[in-house]
Structures are given as C-alpha cells and as structure tokens.
Image 1 (cartoon, rainbow, N blue to C red):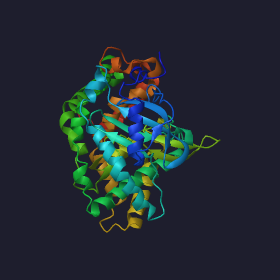
Image 2 (tube, helix red, strand yellow):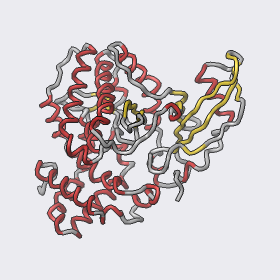
Image 3 (spheres, rainbow, N blue to C red):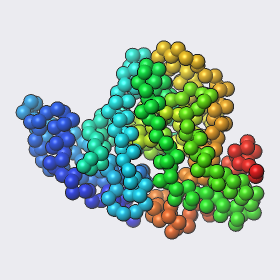
Image 4 (cartoon, helix red, strand yellow):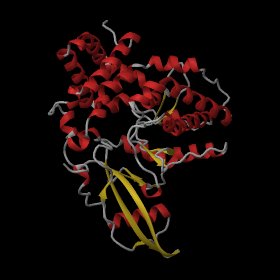
Amino acid sequence: MSTYNQDELVAPSWLDDEFFRDVMRQANKDPTIELSGPCVLRPGTKKGDHFASVMFRTTVNYRSKRVDGEQSINLIMKTKPEAEGLKKDMLENNALFDIEIRMYSKILPEVARLLKEIGEEYKYPRYIYGALTPHTVFILEDISNQGWVMDDFIKTFDDMKPIVKDIAMLHAASVMMEGNGQNVSGEFNAVMEDMYKNFDPMVKKGFGDLQHLAQTCPEFAHFAKPLENFQSKLPETLGSWYKPSKTFQNVLIHGDFHSKNMLHQIDSDGRHTDTILIDYQVCSWTSPAVDLYYLLNMIPTQDVKDNHRHELIYLYYQQFTELLKRLGFLGKIPTLLDLQIELLRIAGLELFHYGVFASFRYLDPTKLDIEALLLGKLDNPALSNPEFKQLMHTELSRFLHQGTLSVN
C-alpha cells in the first residue's frame, strides 16, 4: 500500500506553473516575477498524517526585475478533494478553508504582535496565498527544510512544555484582542456541532465499536446502557460543549489541537526544543477546556497523560494566567478551581474523544483503508488488541464513576 494518500499522487490540473507565477506575484506584490523553472508537485504528507484536506508540496524558482539573481521558496498547500467519497462529502463547503485563511492573514499576526510587546515569540509558517474561488486553496511556506518536523505522540512531560506554552499564548492573546474591541467572538462563532455532523461516520463507527465490546465482552457489559444513553444525547450535548462558557473566561481555541497539527525542533538527543502549531481550520470562541481535552487526549502518549494529567493542567493554568497579567488584562483572573470545574462541566467531550479517536492509536494507517474503516466496510483491528481493551475499560470506568456516563 502506498506511503501517501491516493488523492495526493496526482495534483489537480489547475495547480500549474501559471498559477504559481500569479501566486508569487500577489504574495510579493511584484508583477515582474517570472518562473525560472517548472513547479513539480509532490504529495504533501505521509498517509495517516491528516484527513480533512488534500495536500501537496512544491518548490518555486523565480526571478524578478526588482531583485538580482534567482530566488526560491518551498510551498505546502491544501486543496479540497475532487474524487468522490467520504472525504469530499465531509469538506463539501468552504468553511474550514475560510477560517484558516482568516486566521493566518489577520489573527495570527496580531497574536504575534501582542506577545512580542511582552518579550514572547509566537511562531507560525508564513502565509502565502488563500482563495475560495475559483478553486479552494490555501498555501503556506513549507518550513520542513528549516528543521521543523512532525512527530508522533509526545513521549515526555518536558516535551509537552513548549506545546502547553503555545496554546496558553494563543488563548491569552485572543482574550486581549477581544477586550480591545476586535470582535474575535463574533468573527469566529462557527457552530461546531454542524461541522462535526460531517464526521458522523466516524462517530457512529467509534461508538458502534464500543457497543460491540459491551455486547461481546462480559467485562464491558455494564457499559452498554450508559453508552447508549450518551450516544443518543450526542447531537444535543456536542453543541453545548462548544458554546461559549457562561462561567469561565472564553478564548479563541485552536479546536483541532492534536499531535499531527504541530511541528517541532528536535535536538540531537531527541528532545523537543521548540514547537509551533499548524492547521487553524476549526478555531472558534469558546471555553479553553475544549483545547485542554485535546492537550490531554490527542497529544501525549497514554503513559505521559496518566502520570502527568493534573500537572499538565496546572502548567497551562500558570502560563495562561501569567500571560494575561503581563498583557495587562483588567478582567477577573480565573482560579485553578474555576478551571477544574469548567473541565468537569464538559467532561463528555473527553469521552467523545475516547469513543471516536482512541482506537487510531492502535492502527497503522499505512496498512489500512481508513475511509473503508469509517464507512463500516472493515472491522476495527483495535477491538482485539488487549492493550486497547484495557485502556477503554479503565477510562469508561472513570467516566462512569465521575458521572459522565450514566444509566439514567
């Protein structure tokens, strides 16, 4: 099976040399730019690194009458799927691309500016171009040749620290932007439950697999009714988790804050010395608890989460509140207890993460047709994995004991 996604092996015909020439002219505000060689498209990422787009990379070599010599830039781009199938159905409208274009062209530069004023640096790849018509496309500078690499689940608490700081900086700066009258809450008020309706096959498959365990494994039998109750209320409760909090300071969340949506600088000893976030497609104004459940469930190994769960939340709280103070926030600084209560208020989101995404930790996407799995055409190999079953039994027991799952 190919190392790359099938839909990234052949690029759309409109991604041609003329297109890239025009992109470079617009990005550099220089109509004299001409390409000095062809742009060769190649797959953007390895299979399993992403699902909600089609990605390509290329190198653009060009000359300008305003600058001596040949110049070169590496680009990475997202487009919408053209082949019929689940991925195309999930990305039928342009909402995700519209959000990301606004984030990179407007919000992130202001986040970086505010943080620079207090001596902090918020890094992100250079935005090159974005459009919704006539073709939907989003282009950034490809920084993989600058030492930035994608990694798998984070294996140490120390390597989690730059990630925690990044999300705390985004959250704190967004609070200041809202307070400065930039109406972040109004601009990023996407109804997240509507977006998640596009992922309905994943939800049905994930909770269907848990019900399969409840029906076939005696030790899971007592979870059957609570899981049925939880799933039946999902259309209603999922929306409530994403609505702005009435009891805690809301922020602009990343919203898709997982291990494949970040890049790292890694030293010769394998330690993460720096991290930047990418893929700002589902940002919205709501409770920071949404991103914090991603921080816990979608980024570290299970071992790091089990051993440092409370420490990670405490570290975030320290970073977030200290940044608010340094930025000059005049509102009420929440307490750590306030944050813990907020996390418990939307604890169902953590169960949702386990139900829909946990099994992917035990699958090899290079050896599996993920779309066929999500459509129910394949059995989930994780269901026969003893480690996965033990994890789910432990976590479902926790959710039952804390009241997130209920027989009523």
